[in-house]
Picture (tube, rainbow, N blue to C red):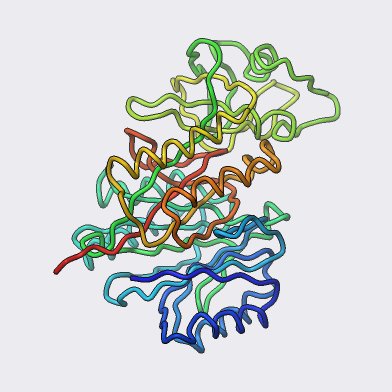
Amino acid sequence: MKAKSIKGKSPEEIKKRLSTSMSDGYKPILAFVFLSGAQFIEEISNIMSDNGIQIFGATAIGEFNENGVEKDSIVILLFDIESSHFLIKFEDIIPENSEQTAKIFATEGLAKFSNPAFIISVSNVKLPSESILKGFKKVVGDNVTVIGGVASDEDMLNGSRIFTNERISKQGLMCLVLNQDKISVNGFAVSGWKPIGTIKTVTKSEGNRIFTIDDQPALDLIIKYTGIEVDLNNKKDLYNQLGSSMPLQIQKDEGSPVMNPPLMFNPSDHSVICGSVVPEGSKIRFSLPPDFDIIEDVIENAKNAKLESIPKADALLVFSCIGRLEALGPLINSEIEGLQEVWGVPMAGFFSFGEFGKTPGGKSEFHGTTCSWLTLTEKDNK
């Protein structure tokens, strides 16, 4: 399996670069397409379809390949993978049927491949990603490999899209099922954020809304431990003040903690709304502000994985939270470049509104402010 990446600012550029990439006889049949905004989706889909290439596509606030981070661009990772080694599923969903749709996708994937892996994207932050992940786990088991990212856009609630060759959705689930007996899918979700303070308990919550931590109003405790100033009369936005730089760390029975950024607060009861569900009884810790160690942890994790279990790769995919870009600024380039240099293969990725992936030593989870990466490697089955 050979991978090639191309990028451009317009469909015309992509068409030329695709033609150049195929001039040596290269015949890709699968493409990951990440682009800013939805205006070029139909044209790019037509270009791919005209060349017999199936699409796994998502909109993004920023996208990147081995040549660096871009905005307002189109990044594509091409594969000449065997068509019998993968399956693409796509469906419009509503919150109430999210888990069931994931179960259907998982069932179909398991029927086609005895050892499937699932690369997914969700088109809207309002859809319950935890329920989607639960659907895959109920069918395949807790150790199922589910990796991916939530599509992003400047219009957080209504702008994001996922798409295949003939379908586009603002409220959907897309899934690439891969046969792991033929294609190795490996990777981790790593945040790098350092904890501060003792472990605390969420004593009252409902969905992704935390009312009390250690029986104290959630917002009051967050203000106490982080030192941020919040205008209770005028500001409900907590993410821009805190969430992207100091997410809550949800402790797990195994594996690394899962990052969950605070997004908003309710001034009347001092509750806090987070990026994903926080069940009552959850154990949490606060985070220190980010520094370069966050980047080093992500890269070191990849280097260790290469030494221990992934000596080679054909391609690299990265789903990095938009919160990392906001917290790290230009330093995010060092993280992207550092990951790519570990294997030195074609890569593509985008800044997402939430990430799926396995924590080191743990299982697949839904994350925030995290970098979820994966390698794809064709197995030698001769």
